[in-house]
Amino acid sequence: MSTAGVAAAAAAAAQNNAIAALGSIVAVEPDVFLSILDKNKEAIVITAYGNLFERKYRYLTNYKGLTFFSHNSDELQLPTHVEVFRAKKIWIPR
Image (spheres, rainbow, N blue to C red):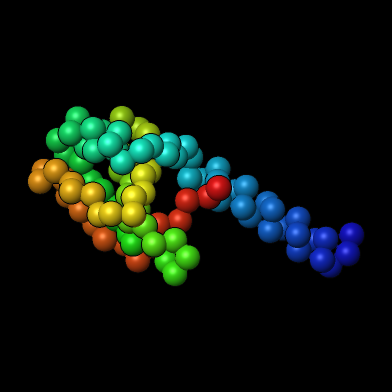
């Protein structure tokens, strides 16, 4: 196998390992995300603002063992009981 082929195979394996390590991430609409937060009185939310190409607010939370992700062009008004942590970036594999 050529050097380029080995590099491509290594990159594909690394991406597959990253996805496996993250587990399942459930993408939901902002209104569904907010309803999940209402059900979880000890909710923690990680927020980040997009980048140069995608100017959206991004949100992650965990509920009953699942990780939920949402994004919106406007900042969501999170419930007051939610503990919020700001991150520089949220990366979700596609």
